[in-house]
Image 1 (spheres, rainbow, N blue to C red):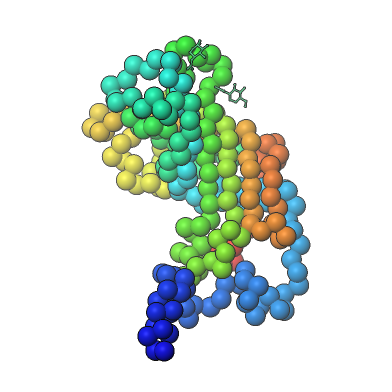
Image 2 (cartoon, protein in one colour; image 1 turned 90 degrees about the vertical axis):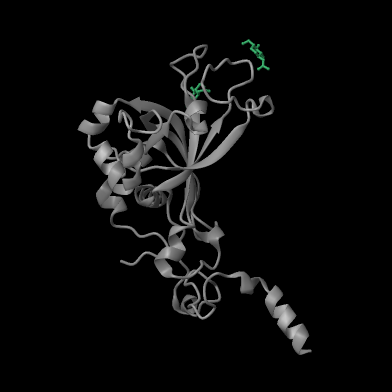
Length: 256
Ligand SMILES: *[C@@H]1O[C@H](CO)[C@@H](O)[C@H](O)[C@H]1NC(C)=O
Ligand SMILES: *[C@@H]1O[C@H](CO)[C@@H](O)[C@H](O)[C@H]1NC(C)=O
């Protein structure tokens, strides 16, 4: 009986939680006593959600880039091992650094692409391609890593936390433009280690380039649909959100 008890305890999914079970129940949870006294919250509007999305971008240091391998008969002369032909025209998603460094920001994140990186290679305009139609990538963000760091406990349901995907094309910035517009200093405040691989630095291990993701569409998953907005943002609204607006809202688990 005791053995059975211990076994069932050790097999309980709760035992896998990395945080103590004595942590307070998340205020998001329907099991939380605080929901008894809170009125049912209203689903935010698209614009209110757009402001939350711009805050998610402003606070994010990393995201996941999805790019598409060229089709197999597009030649790409590079010193690196080519990808297997079985992945031609398929997408690949890889985590990367980012920072919201345009000033004033219109929601177009800055990336530092090193030449050997797959995301960088897949997004280059190839010689046989129309330069007016640069390759598109998507960059997704979530609040999943930030939430436990801020609150000290796991969310009741990560699925109820915000995430988004920005889809657009890359615009290259010259080193001079990146320096003069404060992009380099801003990026280094967010990623001090990137000092080791700055574009133009003769001691850098790899060549690299500053790029701006010019966001054309944003898909937002605010959380569960009964209390969060889910859908495509309006591009002009995304670009128009001011720092005073995203600075005044809070994402789940943030203190005032
Ligand atoms: C190779 O390129 C030709 C012409 O650009 C195109 O018609 C063909 O579909 C391509 N083949 C593959 C496998 O992508
Ligand atoms: C990227 O997306 C734009 C529309 O936003 C489109 O006009 C363009 O052709 C796309 N680029 C490629 C290489 O498919």
